[in-house]
Length: 174
Image (tube, rainbow, N blue to C red; front, side, top):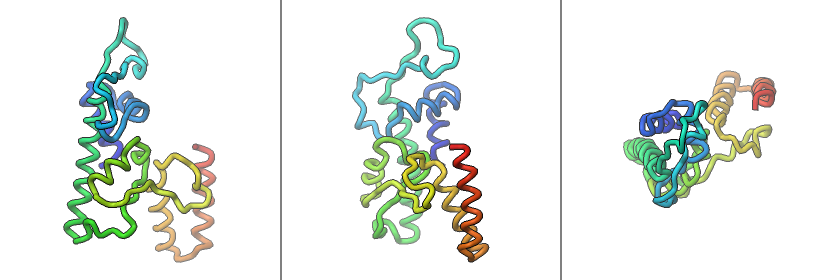
């Protein structure tokens, strides 16, 4: 569960295409409905390739936030459940670190603090070539690859060669 789950929920809730829902999520989405005024609306026509004629369909931005908050709450609740199963809920000295593309959602840290009752921060990737890049969507993959290379090769030299290749690939595609 993650950002794609939120996008799918938006597509169903707004009765639109998944690619349109993704654009709406990125450009209009916020993690909590508390931050949205009740009269704020989104013109869906600006996200459609073939806008409908006339004034266009408008949707409440608060409704969008409700969809997002519901899915984020479910994701956080699953994590909380797992932490309770292993007797670690409320016992994370470093707090909670959010990463991935969904971590860019405005006010997600606020919602996570409310749910976890712990300090929450966004990931600050400790990957030299990645530092300062605001796009967190590749962080989970990079972290898993780095861990796999460390475990498999147990060699910083080998890891550095592979990381360089990955860096060169992403630099050409970011």
